[in-house]
Image 1 (cartoon, helix red, strand yellow):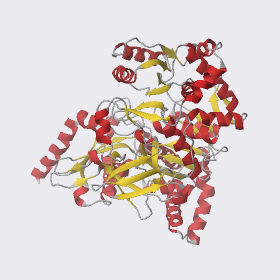
Image 2 (image 1 turned 120 degrees about the vertical axis):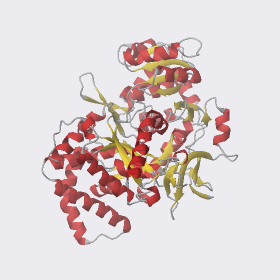
Image 3 (image 1 turned 60 degrees about the horizontal axis):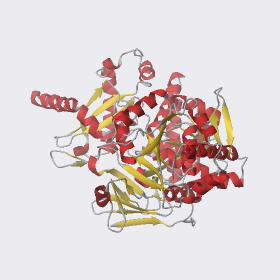
Image 4 (image 1 turned 60 degrees about the vertical axis):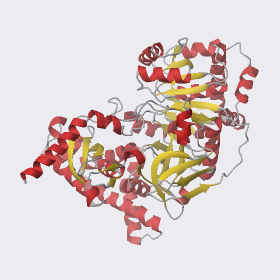
Length: 608
């Protein structure tokens, strides 16, 4: 076995909890702006540490007055917004445990979460969310149906008012009672396969992870930093960043609509972004399409090639003067405009959830935005490793963050241990027994290897490895990521388990398609159904497949593909809220499509 570990950089007191991070900001610099929120008029309003603390305390009093006891579990079903963080901290100040519920959750999923976590109260963003929650609660095996409070409406205001008779001292006793070992939140996995599992994360998971990571980031996240959160707050990744910014005293804004993101970036002008690969692909695609529409395609492509070459050269340590000159020119002509579209101040970003293509990472690095790719799970409080600036190497997910360790089993499975690791699955002793080794290492189910400096490289998902009829093991993620990096492609699912060769199902990006068609001299109004069989579309995708195949052996190469009319979405049940493919659901719902793929291939072979 191979091990790599990073020792803790600072000592964290055992009596500390997440609320102490806000207390430190409130007492140390009460006027420091830690949030920017949408006001009633739609304008952005700053919220200081003192103002946020006062509102948190008022809501905590309201929760106590409604009978929320220490350790009580309270659900939050909402899109990403300021109130998410507000309620999160109010629950912790009241001594309660927050239970995120994805806004896309069905009544049956809510029923399971309510029953498993024994919810005492649920906050729902809208009346529609509340209706779904009530349906779920009625269908659960929970004893008495917990009340549902609306975030949009008067319920939050009334909650503040209801706690006026609660003393500050009572809130302080509750707030200070939790230590690093106590439960802070139960996050239910989005359910890539089977029923969601409740991951129990402690105050220590967030406190240790936040403070140790800040210490290792060398100023990337600090009091002068700002970010816009747009990923689901029900996901551990966004929750971790929300807490780490409180710890650092940085400024956070929230936006629930990714289509509004570019405008919000211009308003907030963040220094730091959190995203998944699809988000960075969208930003790149948007820039490419704009250049295409302005008749500057060749200039943009030359700028991309230069950014990638510059990034690769700086990684190796030698940058020719001619490349430096080209990079300086394109920095003024192209890169500055892209940075401006992202607010103009972004220097770093976190990316996780799935692998980020090397070329895209080099492009952004060459533009001046270093994407810190990390690896982690809900069970590891988001990233357990990070490709941090001090040991940056594109193509890896970096070394363990301080206080954590990675081990590779004989079959290449990644095992992790450390301060970020959750305390176990709720009500699942059977699952806990099979998920941990006797000495506390957690089986992640992912496969990887270590480079010469102990940086982790993820090579695939153990359960997703395809074994062809010829016995060849194929990791689909590498092929899918390469295909998905194309401008026209939205998603790709590689298939071939037990089959004679590898194939792929591809969906097109509906936002990009009209501009792409126009650039090809085709009607931008062409329906998606026609595009799935359009000769020029198929020819373009074949080039993408050929380029992808050049990176793998013949036995791993994609021999056939089909284009689907409808995209995989969260709503269709084929993507998780963090935009990862639900492979089991896709294979179940598109089984006939897969069969047709291989039937057509066999028919063509017979005709030859």
